[in-house]
Length: 186
Image 1 (cartoon, one colour):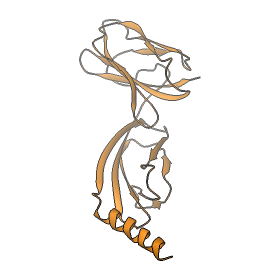
Image 2 (cartoon, rainbow, N blue to C red):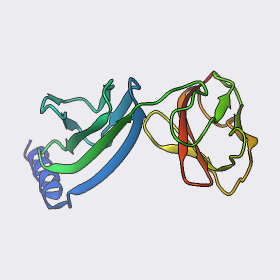
Image 3 (cartoon, helix red, strand yellow):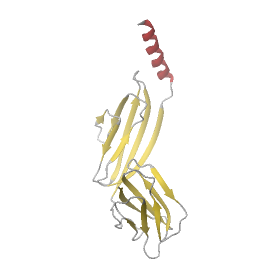
Image 4 (cartoon, rainbow, N blue to C red):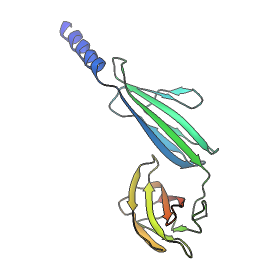
């Protein structure tokens, strides 16, 4: 029993002298779109602080807002010794968006199809507009694929490596304006 107590004390002391990590993450979503926020998995305890000051103690929370705005969340993950070791601030930016090829920003009349898609997404920027860059993000806001310097009015995005689920595809024109589309991979 004495050896077990010594090991626990040593582990707690090591946790106490470890450097606390802090990071910020910004995620952009459309109104009504759910986003799952996940704290680092290598800790035993979690505390989430919502924008309205309510809390949760799970590793992952899922939120959705129908009102555009900026919502700030904080997760604190810690070990068995109750030493706070990892703090992450999540800034969720919620915008009005359309889906299924509807115009949503000033970029023009861009269209993405089909929706749902399987391995390829086609885009059409409309008359007098070119796709310069694109990005595809998963539901956590992580960019899973992107393309640059395309300068095409129409084209395709190879999505064969993506898992089934929802994605946000952003097309950027030559002026830096963008349009976002919520698409489902079957």
